[in-house]
Image 1 (spheres, rainbow, N blue to C red):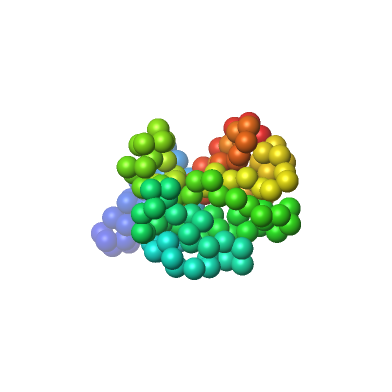
Image 2: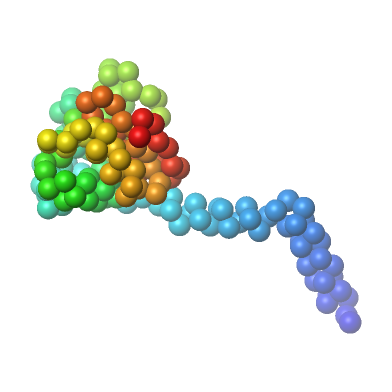
Length: 165
């Protein structure tokens, strides 16, 4: 065995021991999983962009301060479309995208998913917030579902978070 081969063998043994001691393989798998799921398809568009799906227009996600541009995540639109189709009733977006200044004005959290185009506060015509939240919980493995008295907050964050469901 030459010196180079011995060196690689020793390095490999050390790497395996470190990986076992620090659970590096698991950390790498988790990091790879995060990379796979972390890339969200967020569009930066004008409010007059038009249709985002069969039942939703960009204007419905527009910030209440009437800013010309907005952010909206395609995954969020897909979830809202799924909810709309399930209940066969209009989904009203009370709050979609928020500019940071509007978010401050309405006392939103500083790291609000509304400011990232990844959240919506919704009402489904003729349905209770409980019904809507329960269905959203059923179809969303990740993300947030928060049930309020008169509306439901849904967002497409990476972690799973539930409140009032």
